[in-house]
Length: 230
Image 1 (cartoon, rainbow, N blue to C red):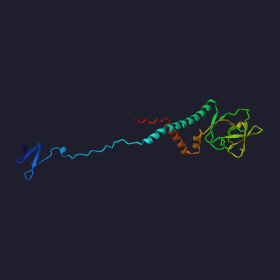
Image 2 (cartoon, rainbow, N blue to C red; image 1 turned 90 degrees about the vertical axis):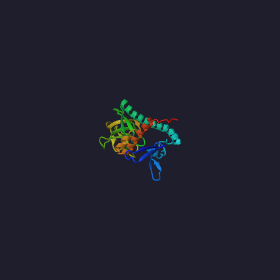
Image 3 (tube, rainbow, N blue to C red; image 1 turned 120 degrees about the vertical axis):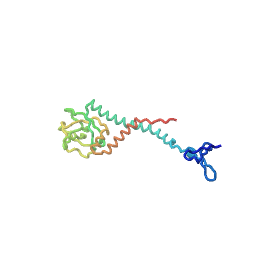
Image 4 (cartoon, rainbow, N blue to C red; image 1 turned 180 degrees about the vertical axis):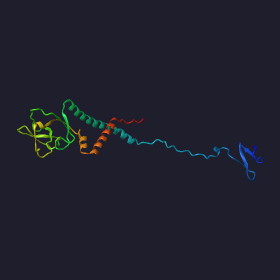
């Protein structure tokens, strides 16, 4: 049986409870129960699908990447080793032997000597006459302060030299005296001076690309890919 409670605010109205819930009378003698908690009237909530599901990776692409990475690493190491060896060769010879390096900036000696190659020259010896075909470095008579590296074409009876660039069709118009020599070519190191040539010619885009490629080569040589756990 339900119990009857009297409202202190309105003694003429009684509040009966059915199974612990208060009821109110409506017309026709029917009583309706009122929910006392919000959880009883709340609608069921549908479950939300999780968005943290793992992303599936293509196993074939990962397999090809694992195969390609060692080859790229070897290529980067080879490039860096060649560059380091050539630079070291120039520095060691210059320091130990005293041969002065000079970057070739023009193509007058092609194909034997290209722009960007470094010619290591020994100081000329007093009283020693050089033979035809020797590569020498001397001051440019037309441009003071500039140096020219050409090959001796003819040794004149007075001891002077007639020179010519390998790529030129005719000999130089001047004679090179013995005291005008600044060096005798002894060693050629290819391509090491190309950054200097690009800078002098204002080819900054190529210079920047070389710098970026070298940095990427260092990263590729030192980078070790992570191994996926089974």
